[in-house]
Image (cartoon, rainbow, N blue to C red; front, side):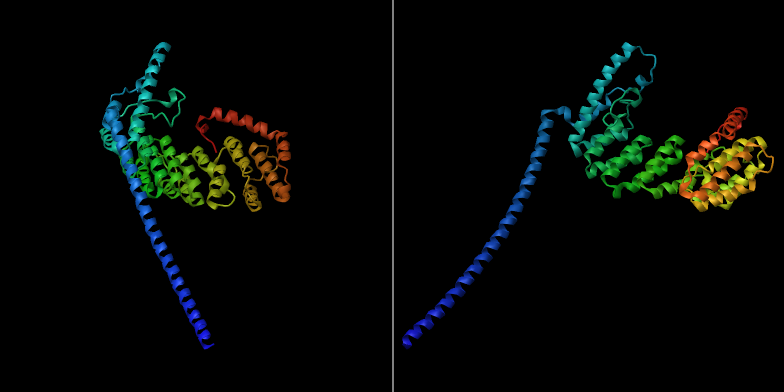
Length: 429
C-alpha cells in the first residue's frame, strides 16, 4: 500500500514538472516568435525604403532617357526657344490692321501660345533641373508680351501675359524648396506689380509662415511708388495677408495729396480703418484757413455717423452749416440733414443724439426755406423712430415725405445748384 502511495506521489511530482517545463517551453516559443516578428518588420521597412529609393532612381533614369531621346526637352534648349519668341505687344496696340491681317496674325499668335505651353510644361516636368536655366532668363531682364487679356476672352490662369509671368507660374507649380527660394528672389527683384502679386500668392499658398514677411516687405517697399489705382489694388492684397500691415500702411498715409490739398480718398481709408481715433487729425485739417467750404463739406461726408456723439464732429458740422450762404444751406445743408436718417444701425440713444443736435436749427416761425423743411422732416422722423421703436413704419413715412413739396423742390434745386456752381460738382458723401 505504501508503495502505491509513493507511486501516486511520484506521478504528481512528475506531472507538475511537466507542466512547468511545458509552460517554459511555451513562453520561450512566444519570445522567439516576437523577436522574429520584430526582425521581420524591420527587414520589411528596410525593403520598403530600398524599393522607394529604386523607384526614385527609375524615375530619374526615365527623365534622363526622355532627355536623351528628346534633346529639345533640355531646360536650356527650352529657355532658348522662349528667348526666340516674338513679342506681341505691338499687335495688341495696333488698331490700323485690317480684318484679314488680324486673322492671319492671330493664327501665328495661337501657334506661339501652344509653343509657350510646351516650354512651360517641359520646364515644370523637369523640376529642379530647370532652375538654373530659368534663373538665367529671369535675371537677364528679358521679357516679352505673350498675350493681353483685353484682346480676347482666354483663360487668364492658363495664358500668362508675359514670358516672365509664365516662368513665375512654373516655379510655383514645381514647388520644391529650391524653386520657392528662387521664386522669392524673383519677387524681391521685380518692380512689376503683377509679378510681385502672382509670385506672392504662390509663396503664401506654399508656406504662409515662411514667406509672409518677405511678401509684405516687398509690397510695402513698392507701395509709395505706385499710382493710386495700383495702390488700392496692392492695399486690398496686403489686407488679405495681414490686417496689421494694412493698418500700418493706412496709418502712415498722409491726409494731403502732392498739391497740399486734402485727399478724400486717403481720408475715407483712414476713417474706415482707424475710426473715431482719427477724428482729431481731421478736425485740424478742417480748421485750416485754406480749407474751402466745398472741401469741408466733402470732409464731413464720411463722418456723418459720428455727428450725434462726437463733439469735434458736431463742432465741424455746426461751423460748416452756419458759414454757408442760404443757397448752399438749402442744397448741401439739406442733404446732410437728410443723411442723418440713412443710418440703419443707429439705436435709440443715437437717434436722440441726432435729434438734440438738429434742435439748434429748429425752424423759426415763417421760415419757408428748404433747409428748414429738411430739418423739420428729419426731426419728425427721428421723434417717431424713438417713440415707436421697431413699430416705426419707414415705408409709410417715405410715402408721406414723397407726397410733400419738399423732396421734389429739393431735387430740382440740387440740379440747378450743381450746374450753376461747378466747384461743388465733385461733392459726394
